[in-house]
Structures are given as C-alpha cells and as structure tokens.
Image (tube, rainbow, N blue to C red; front, side, top):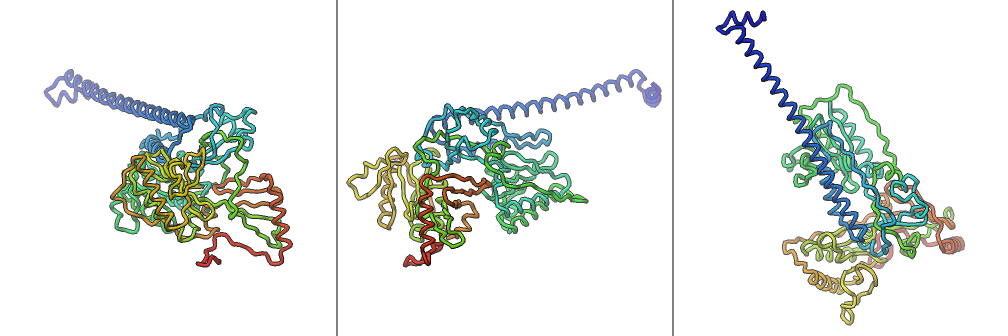
Length: 545
C-alpha cells in the first residue's frame, strides 16, 4: 500500500484506481502466461498425435507388405527404400527431448502360414539365402516364432535387411577408420551430439539437425545442413539430395570413399559450425569404439538387423547348391595337398572378370533394355533382373560359365521352329533362356526383347542416352575384399565357407564331396609338376594366361 500511496501522491489517480490498474496488469500477464502454456501443451499433443498417426500408417504398410509376401508376391527394392525414407522423415525430429527414433518391431509371421516356394521362384526375383532353423540361436528362434521343435528340420528362404550398426560392423577396416575419424572430428565441437537410430545416425545441437551419417550400399556417407549449390563449383561439391524427404534438412551428401573425402567432410563441418556459431571444445575428448564384426544371428537378436522370411524351402533343394565347375581350383601344392579352394563368384564379379566381348554384348543389351520406358533393374548375387512397374520381372541376365544368358518371361513354345534357338525352363517364372555367344545372337536377343516388350505394352524412351556398362577388370583378391566373391575351402569331408559381412565360418559335411576331394588329392600327390590355374587372371587373344 505504501508503494501505491507514493504513486498516488505523484499522480492524479487515487490509490484505489492505481491498485485496480496493478491488479488488472497482473491478471493480463497471468492470462498471457496461461495462453503460452496451453499453446505448448496443445502443440506437443498435436505432434504426438501426428507421430502416432504416422506410426499407424507405417504399421499398415508393413502389414500389407507382409500379406503380399505370404501370398507369394514380390516387393521391389524401390518400394522398400521409399518406405525407409518415409520412416526416417517421421523419426528425425528437431526437438532433442522428443527424438525417440526407436523403430517399431514388427513380429515375424507364424511360420506355419508360410508356403513352400521353389528355388527358381525366389532366385529370379531377389537375392535370397537359405536359413536352417536348427543352426540359429534360441533367442533368434524365439524372436522368429520358431521355438517349437516342429521347426528343427525346416529351412526358409530369407533376406537380411541390415541397419546402420550392422552395416558398420560388417564393413571393411578402412570404412571403420573413416567413421572413427569423422566421429572424433565431431567431438571437437561444443554441444554437438550424435544419436543413432536403426537406419542412420543424426548429428544435432539442441533442437537443430546438422547432419546425418548413413550408408549407401557399402559406402559410408554424411549429409550436411548446407546448400549444395554453394559448393557446386568447388572440390568440396557433394550430391544434391534436396528432392528426397529423408534429406530435406540435410541436402548436401558426401560419400566418404577415401581419406581425402573425409578431409573434405571436415572442412564442411567447419563451414557448418561457422554458420551455426558453434565453438570448439576447450579440452576435446578422444572417442573409442567397439566395431567388432558380429554374426547375422547376433545382430538380429540385438535388433540391428531384420530377417525377412520369403517362404519355406522345399525338401528337394539340397543343403548347399554346388558351385560351377570352373570355380573349383586345385591347390595341389606340397604344403597344402589336402586342401581345395572354391570361389563362389557373384554375378557382379563374373561380369567384372569376363572377357571384353562378353562385356561389350552385356553393355549393348543392357542399354537396349533400359531404353524402354519404366524399366527398373536390380542386381542380386546370381543375376540382374529387369522389372516393369517395379514389380513384374520381364527379363534377367545371368552368366553360365563364360556365356551371357538372357531369360525372358515369354513362353518358349512361341519360338519353336524359328531362328531363335531358345531353351525351355519348365515351372520357372522366366521360362525362356537364350545364350548370347556372338554378334548374331546379340541381334536376335534384341528382336526377342522387342517381342516381349511389345506384348507387355512397354513403349520406347526416345530420350534415353546410352551408358558404358563395361566394368574395369579387378583381381580375385580385390573382389574377395569387396565381398563380391565368397571363398570356400574343402578339407577331407568338411567344407568351410567364409562369407563377408562379418558372418562366422560354417563347417558342413558334403555328400559325395569326400570322393571328389580324395581323387583331387591323389592326383596332386602323383603329379610331378601339377599345373596351377590362377583365377581371375586376364587372358590374351589365344586364350593363354
């Protein structure tokens, strides 16, 4: 009251009037504060409702994809990639406190509902592997709903979808060193933090996203919240990803394919820090990482890898498909006379190590196929498939021995009695096979492709520009290191397969393999000067190494 009286003494207002003004001012401030609190509460509630709605939509999409797989359908890589991008956009938010980007786990379908599918049906559409239930851990079986004893002798076609940590642990030592270098560079900046999700790692400070660390195949990438156009004419230029929702806030992507590219990324971090007034730490901390490789089983149990079950393997399929004869190499050396080495070459490796004539025909035919509108291609371990409408496979390439083969969705009976000498493959999704051994057969292959695409109503793309698809030759050791060739060794009755991506060696006994090994060993011991054939060595025009 004393303050009010003093104010009244210096003005024409009475103490009661001044008290009323003060009270009204206090109530106005209280009302403003209440409105701010209510706005904040409703804003957060709206965000949570939106997140719940997006999660429900994601769940519905996953259930739809699951129904398609149960019915024996195929999900294209584009569909899966688009869903992943939508998921990342949903999970990466600006508010640090609400940045809970744990993926919702979708339980595996009951195995009893999975139908038996043929190996041809799986191989023609995607890169699938066979998983024996008896060989996986109890935790993995429980997670897959296969803990019951009735699944002990069952096998399933599966595909492994690797998360960020799984890709990092399965990567080469060079990639791991680049990741460590980048993370220690980020640790130099005050307030900058990194938080991981299933598909990526987010770089942020406070509520602002500064970058994303991701994988593109086996390549480590980092995207920055910078304008790609500002660096388009410099050596620090990156890839503009502004058209992708996943990179809307971090549109400048750089692939860390070498130590020099890592240094470029460090320079861009400096620019990013200057733009956001981020200072350096006075005493930076040196980070250490445990990036030891783990098996698929361990990664799946830890939630770093997903196992997509495609269907049950029929009993007619052998435990391990035999490799092509040209991939068996006899190491008939005195020190290793009882050991054989097998090279399981992927389709990519076969193309890389093929002769120039095969590469030329392959590049010519691939350009011919892609010159049609709406054609999408996907390369798997065994072949290269071409899809229309992202779902229907109309043609594939595979290499049998040293011959490029074209598989078509057309009925082989259509070519009976014609100049097109095709081979029929009953019960296969692509029942027509044509071997391409000359320029004349290349011409015939184009004519057959015209027939198939015309029946499917696929128009040509007049704006298509041919690309050189002939890869540069690489040695076998190089391709083994890159994971394009898997190495198997056979000793006596046991074959041990060493696979890339951190998978542990698996020993198996082979049926009929002991006789083959014993025969090869006997020949190696009796031969005075055994001839060695080195895989992957280039040949001259006469066929000599």
